[in-house]
Amino acid sequence: GRHQELLQANGQAMEDQLRYRRLVESERDQACSAYTAEAQRRAQYSKLLDIFASLVRTKRSEERCRTHTYCRMRPCPHGGSDTCTICACHIITDKTVGLSMGTIGGVRQKANWECDQIWPPEAQPEDMFHAFRPLVHEAFEGCHTLLVACGAKGSGKTHTLMGSSDNGGGGLVCIAIQEAYARAQSTAHGPRLQLSCSVLADLGDSVMDLLFSVNPDDSDISADGAPKRVVCPTAGAMWDVICAGEQQRAEVHRQRETPLSSSHLIVTINIDGGGSTGKFTFVDLASQMGADNCALNPLRDWADTMSACMVGGVNYQGTQISTMLTQAVQRCRRLNILVHATPCTEDAEITKQCLLVVSRIRLLASYVSTHNLHLQPPSLLPVTGRG
Image 1 (spheres, rainbow, N blue to C red):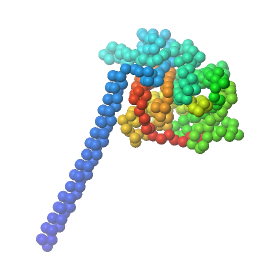
Image 2: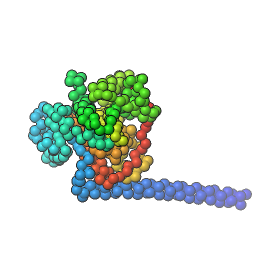
Image 3: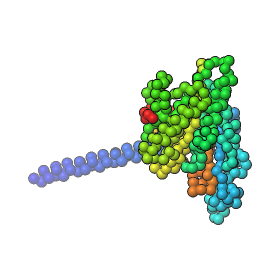
Image 4: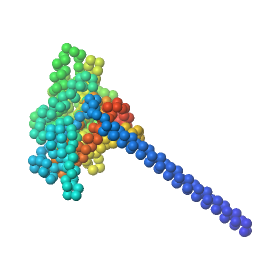
């Protein structure tokens, strides 16, 4: 009996020792995995720091100038002077915005945000269009160009792009369409050109083709998963089609009981002819996106997606709009970002952060174009929602 007890005790001790060894090995493996993951994270972070250091050292070249940033300032009820204690940003020059960075030790901290051009509150879209005219004419050369409008809710993005019903449009999109058809008519003796448009709404959970129900008898319907392109003979006809798409977007939000500012509007004008295809695209970024309904979310997602792709984050899952914009960075001949600033409202802090994130996006986009990088963002979702 005593011998049997000793054998059982010895067996139990061996099992305990084996269990302890497995526990130690498991913890060691977990520690090794954590160490490896941390080493990879630090390596990626170090690579990103090297990229930014290279940007700082590299002089601005003509190639990098393909990325442009602009700002349209909303009025300040206090005059927008540097002495305003409420303004988070104000115009210093036609290319410089002053930012209030809070106070430290009772001293107000300031910083400047530089861009290609700033428009005062009284500026109209027709006054602004001269800066964006190259978007149209480079598309006729077979290039892809892009204008992204961003800013807090109520900052005037949609009004700048689409205009208002009072003046029959009057926004940058309408003016660009008129410019495109005028250019097409001026080249009547050259190759025959065909102008078409597509209008999409990114609702976050799906992408909706807003022109799918426009001209249902039209034979030019794209394959499933791609947006429909409606060929238009005149500028007026194209504008009517785009307005119909915008009305469809409003109806979708009415049915969903969601605000219009919670989806991204994407309007693309395609120019086919002469053996080449060019296009210029306008993107109205949603100002109420994400769990906190913040206009910063699409911009941050875009910057994070580019950063992840540049350091080899192949498993990074960006949003639909950030993926599209990241792909556009390497494909576009010209990228313009138009920030709508609301200096003296409850969204003033959002405006300031938008300006700072846009600076980061410009640095990343400039590096991509300068070094001819080929980003590999997550695959785009097909256009599954139908208007």
